[in-house]
Length: 172
Image (cartoon, rainbow, N blue to C red; front, top):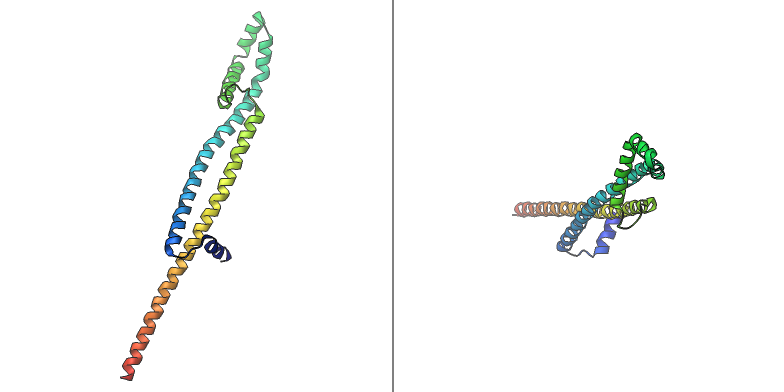
């Protein structure tokens, strides 16, 4: 109840129109949060996939380095023997390079930083979304309580009116 009073005071609700306008604005904010979270989810998947691809890339990197150090027939023989590993190295290297900025070397710290930024943004938007959803729920309860009070006042008023009529009939 204290939080509801704070919500009402903070937003200076004086009329039902004020409440409706606030509700519409907060609903829009909530929808925007959901859209931002969906976008961040896509970015999160991209960077978690980059982490996985980087790990696979690093797994095959020693094979590639050994291959590059060889020459002549030994290089050809090594290539035939390790063809799958060399192909996998190229695949994972290309996947990781695809998410890196142009002209930037493959960098695990950069990938980790991007992933951390996405997670921080998700957390911030989830907190905001939760706060807005809570405010909307409190407002809904408040509106329901006011409607119940209005109905009860009408019922009480009708009962008083009926009592007055009965008293008036009895006095006649």
